[in-house]
Image (cartoon, rainbow, N blue to C red; front, top):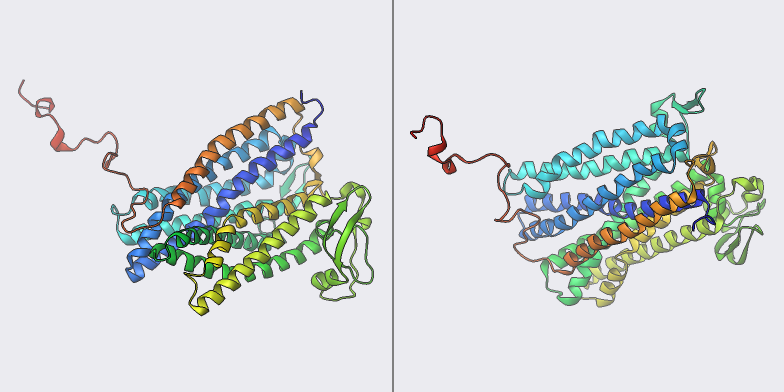
Length: 474
């Protein structure tokens, strides 16, 4: 049935499918954990009940998103062994410890304090509970640190040597962890998580303002979210530009693909806004371009020469159509985010932040834009790295496990069915929670009266039957 499919292509599609699902949840939970820490801190500082209600409102949503992120993340590590065994063997001495550091530092920190954060309010002191919330928020950022360090090393490998078995082995861990692309990718990804969360919170706030503009919780969350977008969106554009310049230095073929530059331009390269890249012909059909603008952006000089893919062996080309359009989706959505931030500032200045319905509809429409943008950014980065798993050193075709196509296809179909059922149900329940307006007396994910309030197996003394105690008369 699957003989017409290539096992390598199926393995790549399976990894892309599962990591796309997974990436949605950490990109939300990283920002939401920090937002929860801010809400609880504001409540402790000001004593305003609205911050506590919003904390409990979003805490329930965070618990679900965090759980789905953990479950979907476990699948990723298994695929390294099942579908990418050669990559695991050759790059494992470097990538393996980095992944282990993520578990030992970030995941243990999150797991150790998550229970207190979710169920400890009212059972521990306010300061201890706030410390637990901060620990979880910091843990999500530490997790991003190690994961992005490992992925960035695959993009810009340094600090290694190759042993007799053909494995990459560490020579300088500082160089490996803080490889050339890592600082840019870390900041860019964390800011993307904050933007994603701000857009979701803003969209939910806008939805409830459209229904009741007097809802205090909706007003506060919408104000905080749009303020965050107004600050972070322009900062993200700046960081993205620096990240692109770094990629030009270390992964020029990726930038050639994003720009659609099949040909070199010795006297200034145009910025191709839109077009249809033709991989076989090595040209962009129906291109709409701005003369020399690409040289201005990348080299800060209108006449600066830029190489094209004609300087790269054709076997080393990324698949340009995917990279080209994924990059434009990301940039286009980033521009819309900037526009939303600017409009919110104008509305705030005019005193119309809570009653300007066109702004609320725009914020509601932009609610899922952060998820689309982070997936488009991931596609740009990962497809732009092709045809290598370790850039310039280990090809993707040489990294796959020796599996037949039907075996990979069977697991792929299983993942598709299970993911859409499980994560579809979880996402549906999150949307249901978001559809309810925040109100006074939010309970959060606290255990109700029918749930155990003590450790299992410990029986309080008053309930012990005296007839069953030692020394009792029979």
